[in-house]
Length: 457
Length: 141
Ligand code: HEM
Ligand code: HEM
Ligand SMILES: [Fe+2]
Image (cartoon, rainbow over all chains, first blue to last red; front, side, top):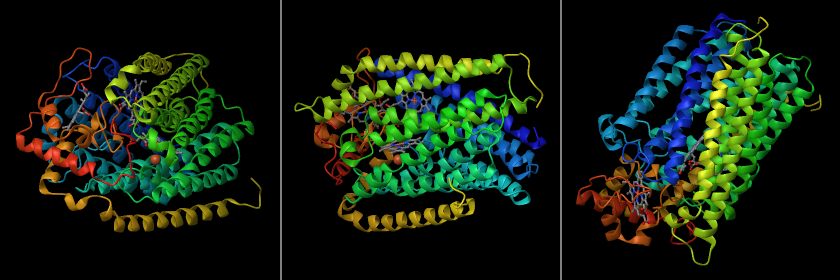
């Protein structure tokens, strides 16, 4: 560890992994409810499990992004963090707020939770991914502002590299677009229109800047390739991201009451969105092939390459699959969407957070890389999780194709629930594969506890 | 990448390109806002509809259902349920949940008053009359 204050990243990474486990457990609960509809009902209705699953995902990814920033920014700016104390304080605020929110979902009926937390003052709850009570949303804003302040002050007093600038720009965008979660007009079309300014402009906009800069940082470290080359790639990739991704928001405006011209704007621009993801894959492999050193952390290199490939498959390929308006007309809001959502989130954001954890955690624990044995175990977990989420995606795609066929294309369309019965085999397979994913995650956690010979950092 | 295309050129293209396309997006958004009243059925937003939307949100119906194709994929699409089932069915349905059929997916009992049920139905009626470019493909949603 070059700078003492980088150590604040560690609790962030640990919390991220702990919440990740929670996310998957609730995923498995829902997976079972898909085929055994009364499982845990009415104790944990499906919608509650879903809120917990998706909100834990978002929260642990945010923990990961913040940890990544606290690790990476001092090293990039070549100066200690502006205020490690503030970083630790915000860690606890965020963790406690997150935990209380999840407990609220699980222990209080949602309508009562809304009453208790002032939803009548400003109604923001009850929209997908933005289910958090008002105090939690405000807490997120406070934490984000304090975090941005800390990182920006560090940047101002130190070296300004492209990697840290792009990272801060991405984080700033994350905070700014989150503000749209406070805008909830009664007009449903407008509500939906601006809801996507949070959701789409996050994952297909500013988060990709964060993704790109973390990936670039790790690639510089593990390959030793010239910074000039890597940062030039970074700029080109994120240019393509924003040029295609901003107007690409239109792929969500086909059927919600927005003007018909969005079919054109949305289809054309979002069809180009896979380009930056493709470039990211080429970039990662290119840099690793041109490496100037053999970094002892093989696991981190594997995660970095895996991020490129899986993000391209999940976001690029599975995104393209259903993004053109004439296709989306049939696939909109089906298991095809769920298939894409899983592989894209995993390939891009789960994988990049696990990449930086893989690279940074050994150093935070005082060694350049983990022992051979621990790395082999971590690489096993990479393959277990990556292959199982890919299989989950394939099963959901199978379910989705049948669903579209039986319910929307067939001459004699079947009702929703009848169709769900017909495709339950796919849901069983998804659930079994989900168990394999959980095993992969357990192996991942265990790899942190494997001893063996290591080199000093 | 070639050496004639430098990092600072790449940076400038990034800033220029992003700002340009963001402004274009804002322009399209302004135009959308102007044409929306022709399509979004907002003339039919009554206090009852507004209250129905609030009930929809504070009971997290979106956590199981899709509405105009967005939400969860566990239970039927409700953007067109008003046309598929009609007001009386919807009210009777919500009142009689959960079905308790073993193994079948369950919807909770929300204990709505008659007034609240009417408001929810008004909200679903309003939603079903938004111009969605003929989505969904058929009545099954
Ligand atoms: C890492 C990047 C991405 C992530 C994390 C992601 C994630 C998601 C998620 C979670 C949804 C479901 C939203 C909902 O619940 O309504 C979604 C929808 C969608 N995504 Fe992505 N996505 C990414 C990139 C892309 C790309 C690059 C494309 C196009 C090439 C794309 C095309 C779509 C489309 C068309 C939908 C709407 C599906 C529908 O109509 O139901 N996505 N995405
Ligand atoms: C491994 C076991 C997992 C299982 C069994 C599982 C199951 C589920 C289920 C049943 C849903 C709800 C689908 C619906 O709305 O009807 C869901 C939603 C979601 N899950 Fe998972 N999940 C798992 C892992 C993951 C992972 C690793 C991620 C992140 C990469 C993830 C991200 C999401 C997202 C983003 C949604 C919302 C999708 C959308 O709206 O399209 N899940 N999951
Ligand atoms: Fe999108």
